[in-house]
Image 1 (cartoon, rainbow, N blue to C red):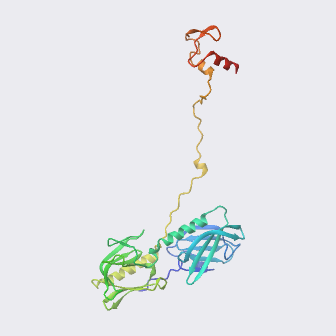
Image 2 (image 1 turned 135 degrees about the horizontal axis):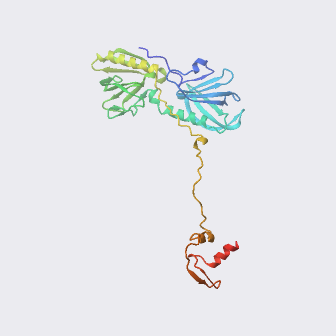
Image 3 (image 1 turned 90 degrees about the vertical axis):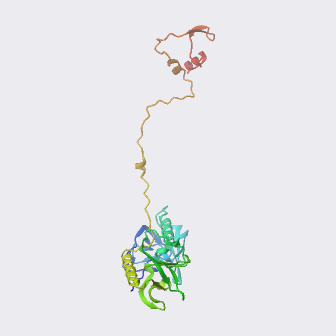
Length: 342
């Protein structure tokens, strides 16, 4: 049975494509859209919009029919270097080196918004997320995908069937192992060597059918030419299960085709609150601040019995040669004269 159309959006570079080819396919979604970006390499001086999805980078001119579709699979490296823009002059720009088939292409994009790092941070982070989630999209041989005879699940992945006694027919004798059917891929591994395994995503399947082999009837999976064009054969025990397993795989593939999972996920960070939201109304404290470093003689004097009702002890003061009320501790007649002089 044929397993659907080839998904090209993340694996090819297209120039000046028809508008319908720039629309999101099923499973593709926009992560960020940046206005006012110049294609400094090919259309220097032309303003456009840069759209980053989970599969590709799009640049669409504001005027005219110029556009670019750069699949994330084609990206080799990303750098930030100086470039000469007709709209901004010498400035920092995003350099993207790519390879499509046997051809290499370099793209240079310049943000026309001053002091905005979105162009750099968005493209770099999405490209990194794409490269680290390849098991959703690419066939993998001898990977670290099995632990203790169990499949290491990817985020959003669910196992629908686990089939023991599944023979891989890649060698003359065959290898006995287990077969896992999930919502994103088929996985087989040998019982005696966990690292002898294969992971086949639904999006890389070209045909799945039952055919005769020297071992009897077998489940045959043919992959897309872009991922190697492998033909993999598996014999199940008992053989009567082949039809049931084939129907299950075809059914899960149809579900995947309607809403594919490509593995690139993102979460929007909460925006920082505005300055007005952070402002707190001013409240005056009901306190009196007293400078403790200054000897306020008047305050000390009035602190005790300022209404004159208390009887004070009378002492003779040698400094003035007169009898007077005893001063509080820490005070003398000289300090009182100094305050009076102020």
